[in-house]
Image (cartoon, each protein chain N blue to C red):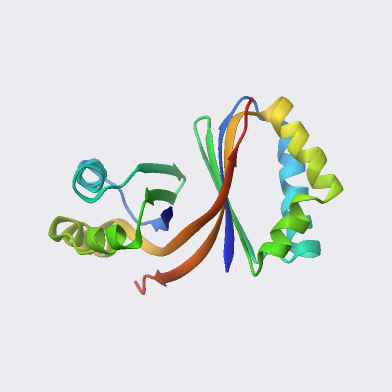
Length: 97
Length: 97
């Protein structure tokens, strides 16, 4: 399993951001095979993590036309800076509380 | 580079949690070689990510006596549930905005 860690400093969020984020989440899952998506925002910082079965899916998703537009808007409008890390999940464990 | 993704649902946070979290962050960096630590909390959810040069460092850190005590307190007191994922960073890119 692979994941994409997205960490950003937010410049400004507005309704168009919320709409786009919801649309991108839905598109990633329905069309590109994203298994899970989680995101948290605190102050002007955001972390989102998406999970995928393969790197090929991640590459296809990155090149989706709607997603490319969202990325451009992110750079120009919503984010001050961001970092993207593509990672391979080596092992995981879950609490049983 | 490796990272540890910690995702949790919070049961209850108090001052003892804040003190312990600060102590653990300092210990991971000073004694076990953690390169970077970032954490966000929104509502009753938390994501924290720590970065490391090797898996050996992560294993040593997991077994630290003070950290083991913190893990026990986390399970019994602070967290409702959590998931830990050890990941290998395959590639990364940063915005130049």
